[in-house]
Image (cartoon, rainbow, N blue to C red; front, top):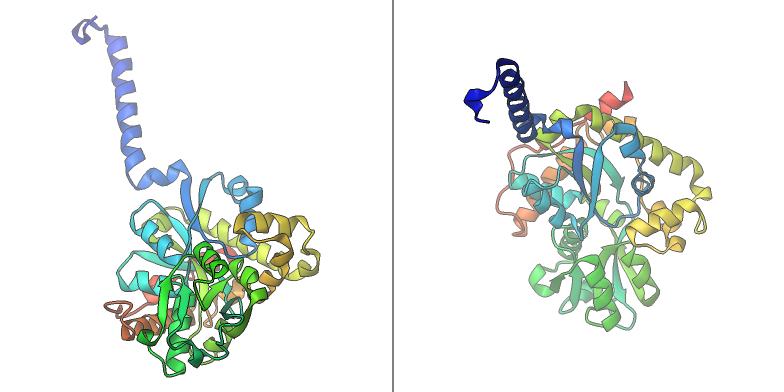
Length: 342
């Protein structure tokens, strides 16, 4: 039967179906795609309480969103994935965030995942003869490029009067660092857990991110979002940070109960790649902030943007970024955290 022979009621019914299908197609490709309630979150291997929310599917249950959790080897990989448009949220260190902002990526820092403190350390291989940062001259050091560890390594070298040309710096992801260490291919590395825990028994800690931060090179890990996506999904983000804050608070209140044999240590270890027996020490090396601390002038309310600006300026000085943004405040927001406190 041709369209011209359709009866009035049938024709009107078909027309309604076609218009409905067209509307659905348009909605699926525009900003209202938020109604699909699906996102991709790029995470790394850091040992943090967020892993429990991932393991239990608690965020999905509370928000109704489908979350595609994708693991990446470093912050540089995360921001590149976000730049492609395939990832809406991700974890990255302050160095990678500063680099992304300097390149004009339309992202915002919405949560301080952790104050890195002593969770990242520069370790020299036992028997290498390296006992100080100055001893790295002429040696081979592995680090994930564009990471906070990379930034701290460059800062440490500069403090010791060395340049990047004085040391052979290799760009390796954490699993590659572990393999290179076991083969004896590198003299030292600046890295975090779970790899840090694997190499320390056969190495000597030279310095840590916490020590270097005292000299004006503060670092942190944060959660960044696509600005446009975040604006269209504010209720989800508010609920997300509420749950993060609650899980961080639970850890601080019950840290002793999250021992090596606990379900928490096993769940965190499974996602991060850490041995459960290493999880308690790894968690203790970080500092986790409350909602009030997150929104304060010391973090999202001011200092985080200043830290990104200082990091970007240092990276430009060292030839790691081509230019710096005139202001890093637009790349940081406390709006979602403040909404979560109400």
